[in-house]
Length: 107
Image 1: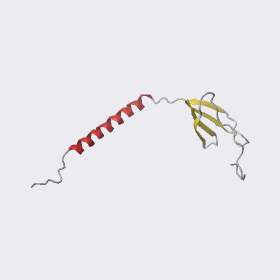
Image 2: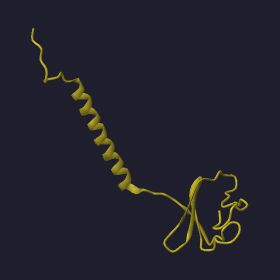
Image 3: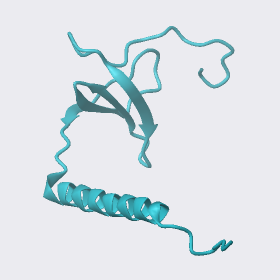
Image 4: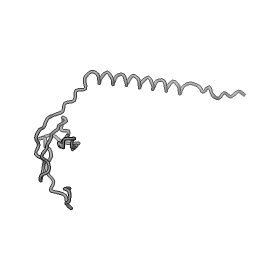
């Protein structure tokens, strides 16, 4: 809602990817007052605008796809963390199977 208004403006289209569903939109302003729209449509997409104060949709100045390529470091870290988690799980399972040493009953 615009500042000082008591009703919402007419809805308008922010993004449209033909033949694909657009989802999970995020809008934010950076420290330079550039408006960013990030959304998912089979790939992650981003567009920016510095002209967004008028009626209707912002005037988009730039748009691109964001391709995520985490590289080998990511795969190696995931493998290390998985092995550590499996070790902890095995150790916890072994600890639960040990008889308790704290309390011994002799009759």
